[in-house]
Length: 386
Ligand SMILES: Cc1cc2nc3c(=O)[nH]c(=O)nc-3n(C[C@H](O)[C@H](O)[C@H](O)COP(=O)(O)O)c2cc1C
Figure 1 (cartoon, rainbow, N blue to C red):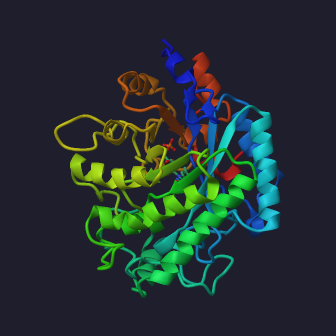
Figure 2: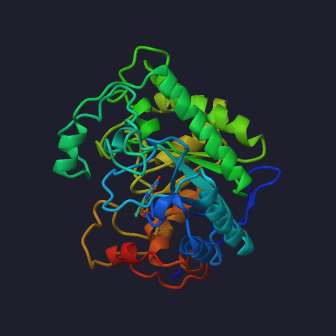
């Protein structure tokens, strides 16, 4: 029996200017197909295809901010990450935005700085040193997705970021947010998860600073809060700011930045006070209980503690999480929409972030609406990225 998904197709008003036509959001997914940092017509067609098929909001793949160490090799075989600076890239993004708008969708760019995950000497600006809050990549010997050779290279300590380097990165986010606004984007998404720059400020294992960017969770959130304030100043009051964070990191799948709901409240409170409008707690399985003693998900706690619109993400429409599903040729799909709707109806989250299901099938959202069977996701879909 198809699951009743009608509540997912109710609109959600985010600001005076921005109303989502439904609750389905395409989760940010690196495509790595923008040579010289410029998204071309294929990128525009790819996002437009999802917007034409009932996706209300697209959060783009991670996009480099205007800082030379923003992105590089972080485990990617070839390098073609798009940028949010420079005339050619912005002209490309205008085409992407126009296509999504023509199809009735909205689109936020995900602004990205890889921080510690960028291999020294890689990317389009190899001379720029990678940015690490305290010079460390993270502890070794944890459950991780990174291969041994990368780990050996990355675990070599470097020097910590200076205050002026921190100021430069904050300015880079503001500049790219302003550029995104001028290209017509409807809001700004910030990648604060998965062990990249923001996350290594949040995580005590990688932030050992004694200045005001370190210390307790409020101090460790100060860098992100300053970026949010700078982005808000750059884009004005109308564009919503969406912030992705995670407990888990690529350095350590089992890590926890917040050990308790009280700590989560202080962490997110700092971000919301700075101006975050939408929260995107990134989990690998959307309904995994976040803390002992309750079955509530991280999205559920986030919504309850902040009252802000919150997106759930992780294995929506799929039976296996991202790292459990790396076997080539193996199809995985399964309607877990009954579980999704149970949590949605309980008010645990407002938005549903869909990753691999939308890679497998641009019309996934339409199938969720009509109850048609889903296309099984395989790794081959990542190779074609139609
Ligand atoms: C190919 C691929 C690329 C991804 N790239 C990004 C990214 O650039 N930024 C990000 O925040 N998350 C990224 N993710 C994580 C997804 O946004 C999402 O959180 C994750 O895939 C779980 O959702 P799913 O189970 O629906 O795929 C990526 C995931 C995949 C599969």
